[in-house]
Length: 329
Image (spheres, rainbow, N blue to C red):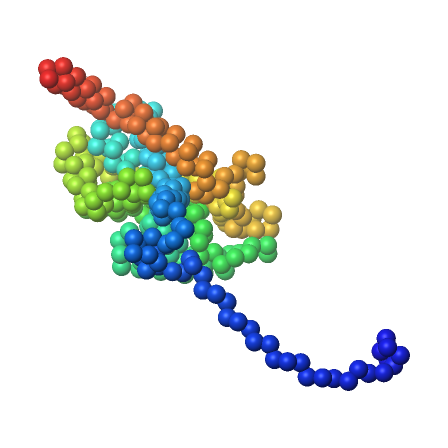
């Protein structure tokens, strides 16, 4: 039945409608082909500059590497500068600098379980191979120890983001440095300096960081009083502290970190420990870029002057010489 009294309206074929293709978008036209002057008609000459500035700001805004490196340096300076005095030991400048530098670089090591992190891409094939060993191992360990409410794969923010993993690597480096001495100390220092420099690359781009890392390693070993010798047998502690500082930094972000694995928390062994939600910040957000990173950078310089033996008098002497030079000119 139809609304017209039960009679069906006869079907008649509808004329074919030709659909015109959508017009080409002007945004796809190359600016250099759009006009002889090389600029698309009606397009602001400042649009390209604004896009470049936006990309640069976003790159600087993603300052997670900077925050990790500087927070590790702050922790390393504090521990190496004050802890020895508590047991009646006067650390050398080389000891403090080596410990702080290793701590800064180690603060980027936990992200070796991420395929696109600084730690994974820093040393080409070597770091890529290390990442491809760490990630499957972390995933396997996650599957073997996961709780009833654990979800995910465990390949990122897994064993490298736990206190157990940090302590295990630190103990291994302590034993190796006590057994083989300088080669382990210098090698660990070079790797960590290279990681720290690359972490700061978003703010301080420059020449190849591996070359800079090699030069700084040489200076610490052969020029700075004391060199690396004073850290034999306990340099791994700097690696442990740096990795834990990294995980604590991740814990105050929105995702958290499984710091306390394998302790069961709410039926989860890989429980993402984090700060209270109102205090969490977004990774690479404005709080980190304009508050956390600058504060940590200032703290590094202040602590270095306070705890590195001989640094404050040297800076004073350099300042006086510079003042005489400027006054004489």
